[in-house]
Length: 110
Image (cartoon, rainbow, N blue to C red; front, side, top):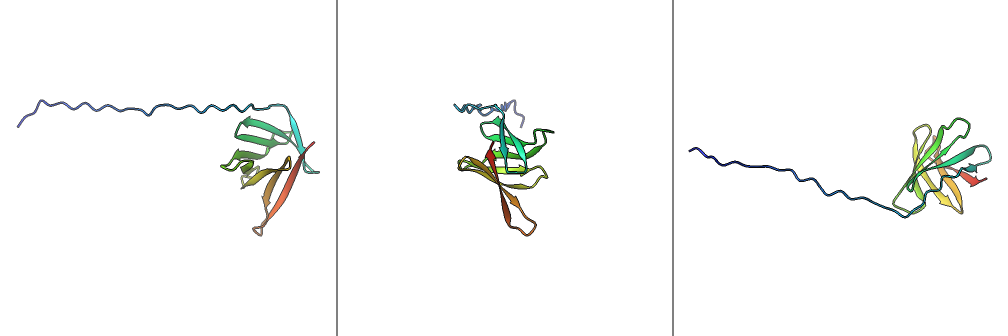
């Protein structure tokens, strides 16, 4: 049995959605210090910023927003993932120790 039936397959793409926020990103240089290190806070987007050494622009830590307000997923300069958060206007980074505990590095705005 022969058939002259033709099947046309079309692919439909999903509609594009754009997320627009009313958040203004401040790009003025802000210096934060823990007493030993002076780091520049560089805003990348509304959900990401970097603390970098101003002398060589090497990122000390990259902060990405988490689902919880003022809590960040952080990647340290050596690639270690950890947590960071805002506390009383200061940036706190939990630095992992070799024994599995954490040390708090507190950076205050200079």
